[in-house]
Length: 179
Image (tube, rainbow, N blue to C red; front, side, top):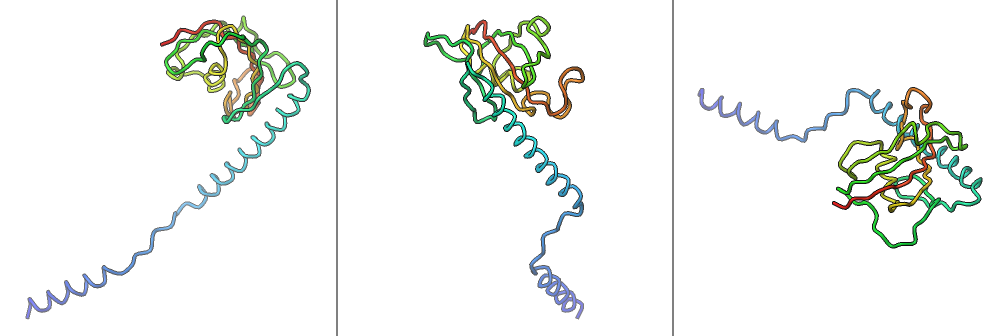
């Protein structure tokens, strides 16, 4: 009798546990709202910056800008006709640069920033510089219009660069040492 009731109990529990379970829903809906609003805000910032880039490009008479898949624009101020290669991962590059706002107001000059030397895609540097140097060959000078998310983002630099400020970089690649 005890075995029979124990067997029935196990059978009932087994049958009841085979029902379809509903997945749990997130408890914290505020986080979802925050993420959705944050994504919306970032898309608006990007759209505004792209409009500012188009306005800055229209004011340029001597430069012919090209867009990239990373969201920035570039033009060659000095292009070398020699067919040399571009920097690749692991190559050591040395360059100097200046930072301006989109109205060409100087924020930091080459002397303040100094020469920079780093291994491509292997050292920590702001994304704008990491990506920009890949478009230059030795002795070339490029002008880059970078969105804020590739520069100093929502924090700025605490001095001359504001929050969510798109910037104009002029980069001169001085030396390329192949890996």
